[in-house]
Length: 192
Image: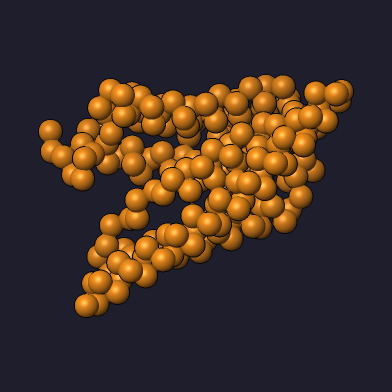
């Protein structure tokens, strides 16, 4: 087994399987929400958010950190966040400005990754701020959807959901600034 920066080249691992299941849940969630099956969509969204936490715990505890997992997990997160936020905006659960703010950050970071790739550099490692922002957003979305129901629980879920969403957006952009600074230092060091 070949090791690269503490990550193996294994493909068939439990954490990778969890990330793959999360990817497969993306269209399931979108279809459920479009069909107004909000209860089931909420369950899928909650399971997806929990699986994001679980794959990292399993990878570290069972020593199954893999290069594929380091790419697959953030890709699954980005796709789930994108599809979730667009579908929630389409349904009127969240405003479209939230979609624009989140997508713009990912587009900018995608451009940074392309510049690094053209310079022959590897993708940047994930920062704790990025993980925390993703965590907050993955908790915000089920709460905001739950807030779309009726009753006293819905009102509390809306307040808590927006708290997570705004905190997540702030962390998302803060981590974006950290990535941009790191990329600048990597490219400057390469030029030196």
